[in-house]
Amino acid sequence: MEIIRTVDRLSQILSVAKEQGKTIGLVPTMGALHDGHLSLIERARRENDIVVVSVFVNPTQFNNPDDLRTYPRTEEADCIKLDNAGVDIAFVPSVEEIYPEPDTRVFDLGPVAEVMEGAMRPGHFNGVAQIVSKLFRMTRPTRAYFGEKDFQQIAVIRRMACIEGFDSLEIVSCPIKREADGLAMSSRNVRLSPENRKAAPAIHRILSESVNNASAASVAEVTESVIKQINAVDGLEVEYYQIVDADTMQPITDWDATRQAVGCVTVYAGDVRLIDNIKY
Ligand code: AMP
Image 1: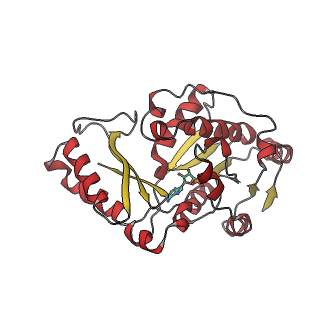
Image 2: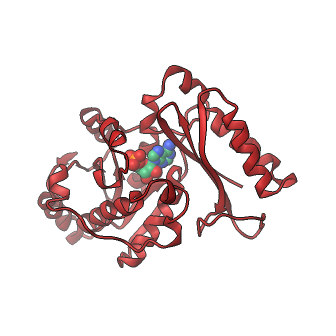
């Protein structure tokens, strides 16, 4: 595995690979790698000749300076995991390398970016679009891999790829990887207090139970019941729970057997913001 820190070196290596007709799989990450990231990487490894994993804590997608400051950074351990996973290129640039000057682009991301995370974290998705579009341009991958844990993010990236003309690039969405107790794996989980770590699996349990009960209740009833049950767990507080159309991200009012619905939640466990979702 080669660790690359500059855009020039990345372009140089990848242009050789492309001349040889090799396919390139890109997995963008912010590091502090766990098995969720590794599941994306394994899939990229199976489906491409060259696997590039970027490790970059992108400042422009953080709307909360404390969150950016406390975001876990474990570069050395990450590179060992990437090497063991058979990655060809770890792209680990500095902030200056990615943003030699401020990125002032404002993307027209449309309705998919206006609800939920878009409403709660102003500027977040624009920052995601900035970094992912730069990574797409620098890497020109055949396929790029994203996790369904950040369900809305995938819809936003599809929209960005469409408006930026990344037509031939395949965006691959990968299932959520969970701890044995059901908690969705996340780099932020290491910041949970022992008590909140014990409480957090209730999120997935309550969401799963709500799927079993959905046939007998309205969308509004299911929504209300999920919020009530999670808030009843000591240490957990729901920021939002919304059941939306899986393609448009718009809230639904009635179940429609012809459309996939997904319930998206964010929960504060102490000062750690956890995100999860479930399909109905
Ligand atoms: P992050 O480093 O948190 O920005 O995540 C990088 C990529 O890994 C994103 O596409 C995430 O959706 C994905 N990812 C993070 N956690 C998980 C998980 N538990 N299961 C599947 N994918 C994940």
